[in-house]
Image (tube, rainbow, N blue to C red; front, side):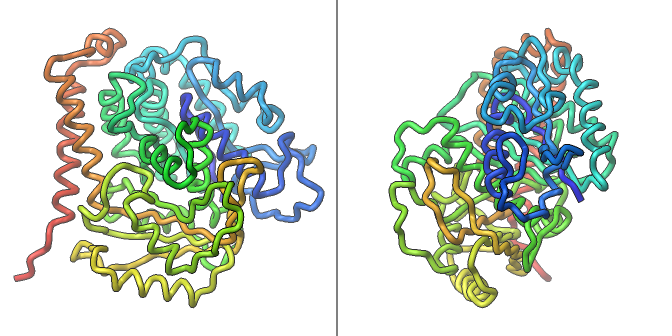
Length: 437
């Protein structure tokens, strides 16, 4: 059961670079696609395709509307890993405009992208699902992603579609129109994606500052940290283990209602490379760390909301007994509140494969780690913040003409606003106590 990864826009491709660098290290694949001599693991056909020349090629597409970032991959360390047809770029960018990515410039490219996706799907025995990597704030990451996800639903029906999306920060913005792009693409994809993992650059900056002693982290530093989470989420799809979790199980356990599909992600432990000799944390300590607000990869406080579901993905030398102990400890903690209609159930995944660190990277090697994916009502804080920014811009119709000029109707802004207000209300409703009479 294979997974196809689709990386869109600058953020999507750069995050893709960090992910595939890590996947190659984990599976013993060299930058030219050959296996290292000692690599015996053959379980990674989920993410890699073996060619007739014994080369391993990622089941991935890297797509951007302008060539700069794509060219960096074409000439970079991993240029031989990807087939040239997997890296797609056009001549002009989306200029931070959702409408250019969805309508004008994006539409010229969409058929080429779908054709390459069809070729990637033909190399699979059975496509298990699709992973999309993009930022919500950019023009390509928002517009082209929205267009592509709609078309994938048409062509591939109910195959699960998962998204790792870079959410705009509360304080750091690369474009004034980020609130427009973010909410327009969320409105477009809300009915099509099955599960969207939200990651916020500002929260990752804070992690780098406090855990890794970095005061000016680069995008490479941020992406390598996010890549560890992507690796943990996909580990049970790539490695054999006692308790593996497939895509359907993620959906079943994390998404109580189709629209409530924006889980929070947290990860522990994070040690700087300057501390290679640290005390190994117990499963109880690791699991408790995942509930700290500063362990979450999006800026919101889970203690202000209620949990609907939690999925723990453990890696390394952990036993079933240790994990049971840690879950018992979590149930006893009063500040972890569940909605009253959910029976405080935890889904657990286990992989005996210890986390892999990039040589010369920012993270110290650890023998065990845990990634927690939790569906919490506190994510509504992030939508409320973004809705407010959208309203501030739209009240004066600021920058709307740029979107209309690319073929979008102004009414779509109103529809988007209504849909996102409804999403806020949905989260409010699921968090309310049910009164049994």
